[in-house]
Image (cartoon, rainbow, N blue to C red; front, side, top):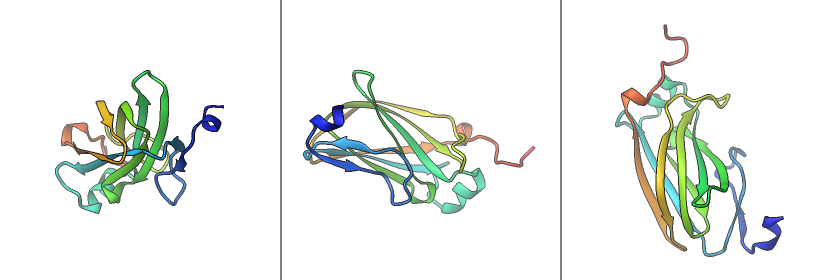
Length: 136
């Protein structure tokens, strides 16, 4: 098992138990996705959209899935500890049942350096938002 051969720690994205766990080396770096909804970081934007979490799927450069991580939507950020290397990610806002509330945004060529954060600003513009639940 790969996890048994790595020294490091286990990281999880939030206290509510959302997301998956990943084994990261002690010299990990961080992917920080700071996001807005149509240019706003007001919690009411999450409510209007019916989004409860931001979901981030991370994949290593060789195509190996690294993990799926979630953070509450009103936080307007997600911080993920990763071992140094190159990654890609798919990011979307999700409802409480895991359904997409936005189209996915692909992030490519994410270079994680040990001990350093990589901050990615991201806006979900109007054309990326799905109809609010109950709208006709």
